[in-house]
Image (cartoon, rainbow, N blue to C red; front, top):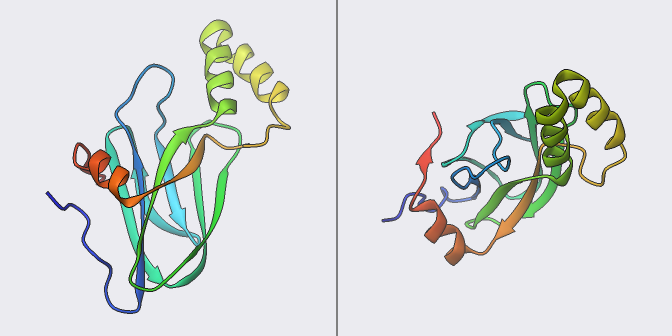
Length: 143
């Protein structure tokens, strides 16, 4: 089943998906492209937006999580680009410390991981189309 068709002529389509949750590796993020909302991404869902071909910035934030995820992409007209939202190492460390130490653990975890290579809750991992279409077949469009 084809859930995400091609973009309109002169446009590119950007799809961000999150696999079904497993343990701490789950987030509920607000995802934007070029500052405009794509939607609220949660485990087992995907969001997408059509934009003119060219340079774009993906952005994600999670309530109460200290930091934002950003990823620059360059797209070509007529193509669809798929990105997997994978929880960042920083997110996993902070959430683990929060579970162990409550609010104090969250504050310590946030401070300790401030210099992380990935300061936000997720990493945007580009997927090839075949892998993305296999994965997206099990997901729902986020509302």
